Length: 200
Image (tube, rainbow, N blue to C red; front, side, top):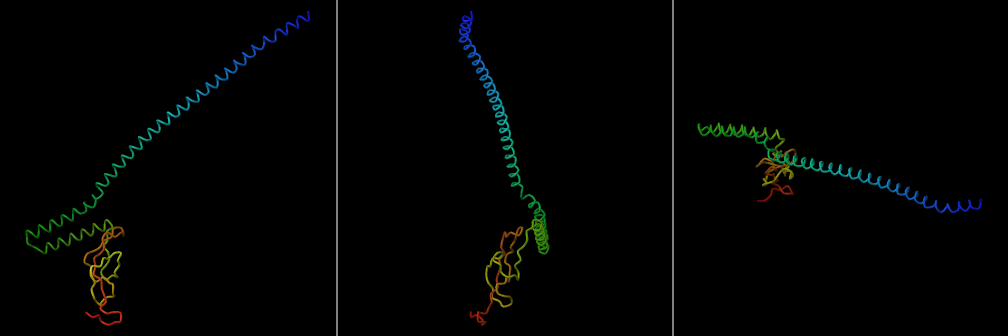
């Protein structure tokens, strides 16, 4: 009997192997399924984040485009009316000129015309001052090529050589930047280097 039982046990061992293989295969399939589920969830999460970022980028692009267009309109508007303040200031100048001309024409009064021109000149200087426009100092100043433009020379010993003796046209600076040099006459000594008068 003992021999038969041993024989039975040996006959049962080969039957257990397929069951173990099947269990291992099921576990492997379960692990693979879990991994696939995790990968699918990760992919879905990434796709969702990508969609969110894409929508955000589209919104930001649209906002920036609107901002750029708005700023361009503001710049165009500023360029169009940048000189409005200046021209408003000059309206009173035009009024004074028109009144002076009308007075001179109706009364043949040259003194009134001169007075009106002087008033207009004064108004213009006020406007220049408001916008930090200043005249270039030239009269009796040493000639400065940075601010003066010499038109001619005048021989004289009354002032040092290279001195501005006469201003033919006033120069102007805007915020210390030259916008027009003063056109001037510059002195020239009548004596030569030896101190003797120059021959004509």
